[in-house]
Length: 335
Image (cartoon, rainbow, N blue to C red):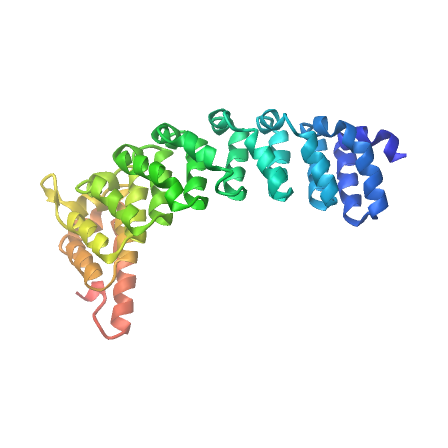
C-alpha cells in the first residue's frame, strides 16, 4: 500500500517519478489520499532530492486548497527553503502558482534578507522569481535594497542577473535610482565580466534617453572599448539598438584617427574589434554604411593581410553584391 509508505516513496528516485506520473491522471479522491499522506512531512520533502518534485507536482496539479495548505506549511521557513538547493525550486513554484495574497506572504518573508539571497547560488533564483511574478508594490523592498549597492551587485555573478530582471519587469519610475547608478558607473561596468551584461541590458530594454546617457559616458572611448573582451559587446549593443544619430556619433570615432592610426585598421586587426566592424556593417544603413565601407576600402591592401580581414572583406562583398544586384553599385572586387 503506497499510502503507508508515501514519505519513503517520495524520497526514492523511482517512487517519486511513479507518484508524479500517477498524479497526472488520478481521480480527485486518489489525489486527496496521497496529499493527506504527504502533508505531515511536506516541509522536509521540499528539501529532498526527489521529494521536492512531488511537492511541486501537487502545486501544479493539486487543488487550490492543496496549494494553500502547502504554502501555509512553508510559513516562517521561506528564507531557509530559498537558500536550499531543492527548496528554492519549491519556493519558485509556489510564487508562480499560489493566490496573490499567499504569494505576498511568501515574498514578504524575504524582507531583510534580500542581499543574503542575491549572493546565494540558490536564493538568487527565488529573488528573480519574486521580481518576475509578484506585484510591483510587493517587490518594492527588493528594489529599495539595491539602491546604493548597484555597482557592487552588477559586478557579482548572481547580482547581475537580479538587476537584469529588475530592469525587465519593474516600472521605469521604480528603477530610476538603479538606472542612475548604472549610468554613472558605465565606464567601470563595461569592462567588467558581469557588469557589461547589465549595461547591455539597459541598451536593449531601456528608453532612448537611457541609451543617450550611456553613450555620453563612453563617448571618445569606442575604439578602445572595441578592443576589450567585455566592453566590445557593449559597443555592438550600442550600434544595434541606438538611433541613426547615435550611430553617426560612433561612426565618427570608428572612421577617424586613433593614437595616430586609422581607427578602422586598429579595430580590424583586433580579435574583438573586428566583430564590432562587422556589426556596424550589418546595422548601419545608406550613407552611414557607405561611409564605413569607404574607410575600409581606403586600406584594402593592409586589410587583406589581417587575420580577420578576410571575414570583413567577405562581409563587404556580400553587401556590395546585394547593392549591385539592385543596380546601385558594384561589388568590392570590381571597385
